[in-house]
Image (cartoon, rainbow, N blue to C red; front, side):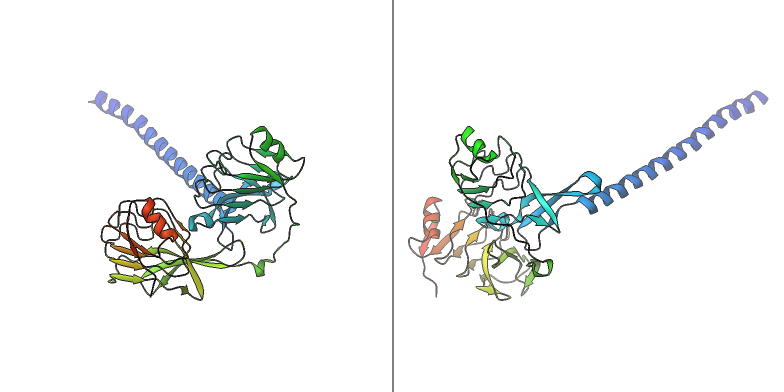
Length: 333
């Protein structure tokens, strides 16, 4: 009997110690996880990407010397609204923008022109890759490094460079077309005068929209998401919302929503984003005016039953023919 109790005691003491140690380790691990998460949150708050006030660009940050942040261009948000021109700002909240991050402008199929400021020093991997419409990229003499694959699959681009610059040598070595230019002096815009974009606004419970600004400072309204709960069968999008021209239909704006029969686009419309009507089985007709100048190649993917109605010989007409879609001649009214 005594041996049994002693054996039990010998087993329980180490077991108890192990339990205490496990609790201690668990507590320590939890504290470490919490500390790590807090550190991550603090880092993200300090160095997380931020958008410019006009809605055109995403700025990313990395730690520099003496706890100073280094700002770079993380992406061209205006490309998601199919803006054809990008003039990159030279600073963000007083910090110079010194780099173009990898893939910052890649796969924007309607992008035609990019102007970089004289603060940029490096251009990252595939920064301008797969941009078939890109024709002009202005690179100042401040740039001292360009990734070998920065312009992959963008065959129509001409580099505008300063004479004797690194960019000129890069263009010559890579047998790219280039021309000389002189950049304009940098100009600061006071914070209180910077344009302010707005997002996720509701239009009569029919759809949501954003308002951003293009490189000229002109506001642009983009339809972003159709309200699938709407009872409308026939939608006519107005030319203006809040006094701003409706110039874009965002990517996936009407994708997979089968409750609409027809959509009449505004006269002010310029572009239609990727898979905008993807897999929309109920949609029968979409009406375009003369002014539309860009429709993404896959805008009607999975919606081949749609008839495009537009003026003869308009961009929309040629798009319908090129993509084997039904077409009806229509001139508004």
